[in-house]
Length: 151
Image (cartoon, rainbow, N blue to C red; front, side, top):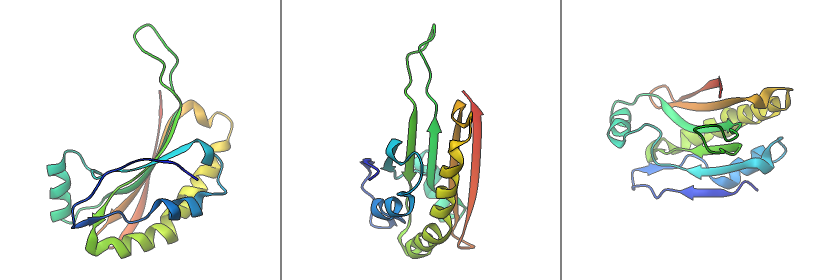
């Protein structure tokens, strides 16, 4: 079971599109499962005013992200930063919860599972990686946005 480390309470007009149990059910057989933590955050776009604008203009925004940070050893100016695997779930407007939930279950989480299976390649864990699932409320669609960077 992926531990939930934080869950922000939402206003009545927002809802999380997927719960911890559903994420756990889909990702249970994936590598790295024991290293993951999960949080539920109310701000997929920062600051809050920008998120409210994104919602009012029905622009696409992330509703789910999984990130890996390989960590850093102490250097001259830095402290030790531990290796970290993190899932973050972001809210949708309550009226779009059903659509977003269905897209996550049918497309998004299986894509995350496939991405996690790719993390076992030699050298993969030498860089930071993220996979974001972007929800388009106008077209009721989901897209993937993957990033890697050297730390």
